[in-house]
Every structure is written in structure tokens, then in C-alpha cells.
Length: 161
Length: 161
Image (tube, rainbow over all chains, first blue to last red; front, side):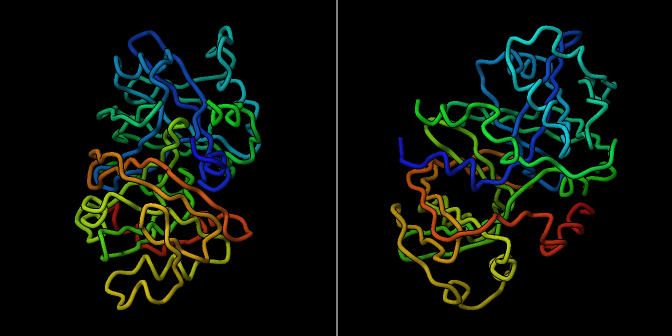
């Protein structure tokens, strides 16, 4: 491991999102920061996801997701969906139906309705490359920045692995 | 094309970077916003790159790059390396030698020295997945955010393609 790998979190700018996935009636959602646009035409997003997580299994089976943008005052939502082992994780917030059948977080600033195109390798994660098939603004505000969340996700420990 | 694809630029948070590539003595650099971390261990970055550009050819041949982080007051650098057809593009700024032989922008806030691991498809771009083999802070400041650059890159036109 290189020294100072934690500078990635300081200098690579990320937003904060709740990514919701579905496979039929099974649904889950998780907080993510490693999200970027990757294509203009077709419009595509990519995000990095831990392939050992339940959400990865739903995503690769159902092939749909929504990327829901959190605003400056929504750190509590990031914390909620960033925690594992929370009971009734989905029930704590209101959801709308997305175009592609993954749920949409009603409180988000905006959401991107996505179909999974393919997955590629990325070290200890996988990159999910998704086509954006719908987008809408839901609420007014400025996007939350990942560095504003502090060490919410305990990532400083992960660089020591 | 979906309506409102330009909302990607508004709601997906990106920083602004100069990515420098090298293949032996051949060097080039370009401005990029579509950059994210993708792995903790090994530490990896990914960025989306237009495969028709000269820099893509250098990157895939030389397999090294640096991701140089621009600060709040460095919009002029972003504009310089975001323009095509600029003569002596590299000579306008000072460079240091990176570990992996791609040049480092001396004025950047921080840089990530990278080896290209692999490339994967992403619509009208390619995703370059890179292992970070070195990182250093060079200057003090806050990272520039992509939305602060306005329509510097003319991207609003690209959604109409």
C-alpha cells in the first residue's frame, strides 16, 4: 500500500448519492460517493460498488437502479443508507416508482433512472456502467459533497487494509 | 436521447483535473472532470476519456498517467488544457517528473501518479482504470468543482448529438 492513499478522499471530488437497486420485488439502497458521468451519447453514469454486498447481487440480477442525489442538509439520509444491518432500511423514507422499476428516493434533489449496461473490474470493487434512461429534479438545493461527510463511512480505516 | 440529460452536469458532482499522459518522450495533457475513486486496496482511480483523442493513444501505449488536481483559482489552467489545437500546450506550465514517467503539473494542489490497469467501454468514451502508485500534496487550496467552470467545455452542445 502506498503512503497517503487517504489523500484520494481529500482531493478527488465526489458527491453523495443513495443508489437504489431492485430485482423484481426485492429492493435495497445504499449510500455511494464513487459516482461519475462517463458518456454524453448515450448518457451514461458509472459507480463503484462492493461486489460482496447484497445490493450488488440485486443490481446484477435486476439490471436496474436509480442514482438519487443528496443535498447539503441530507447527511442523515447518507448515514442511514450507509449503515449495514439496519432493519426496515427502505421503510424509513418515501419512495416513488422509477421508469425502470427501481425505486426513487422522494426526498432527493434529483434522480437518474438507470439500466445496467455492464460491469467491469476495479480492484476491491466493481464498476457498474449504466445507461441513464430518465432524469428528473425533485427538490431544490445544492448537492452534498463527500468531504463534507467527514469520516462517516469509516473509510480512513479501509486504507490500512 | 432523453430529455434533460444536461442535468447530469448539474447534479453529478465532479472536480476538475489535468490528466497528463506519456509514451516514452511523447507527452500530452488534457482537462478532465469525469474522475472518481474506484478501489481502496489497491488504491485505484478511474476516468472517462474520449478514445478518438491523441491522449488516449498515448495512454494506452505508455500505460502511465498523472491525475493533477486543480484548485479554486485555476480555471485558466483548466481552460488551457481543455482546448484542442493549442500549440506548445505542455510548455506553458512547469512540470515535474512523476514516479511512473508521466509528467506532474507543478502548480496542482495534489497529484496521483498512476499506472493504467485496464480500459473498459462506456458509450462514446472509454473508462481508464488506473492503479495509484504515488500521491503527493504540492500546494494549498480547495479543489475546483466542475460546475464552477460554467460551460467552459461546451458540453451543453454535446447532449444534443
